[in-house]
Length: 67
Image 1 (cartoon, rainbow, N blue to C red):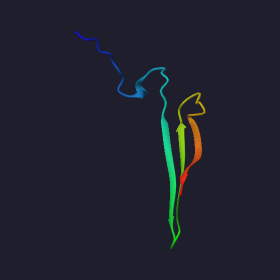
Image 2: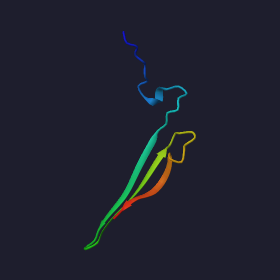
Image 3: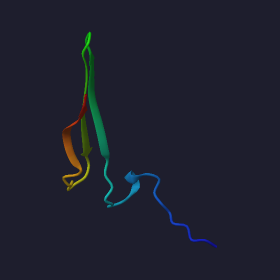
Image 4: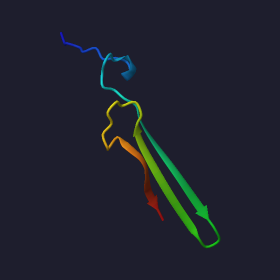
């Protein structure tokens, strides 16, 4: 017989664990004029419910790409 571990259905069901919610947002603009076109994109990555977030988890707003 195999031993099966019981895992919670979602992170919200853990008691006293270290789970947290991570979110990522992308904001972009694409502008077309007669002979001119530009694209700009910003990104934000946050660990909203983490008690002590690291610098990697607190990427509030960065310039991502443009052309």
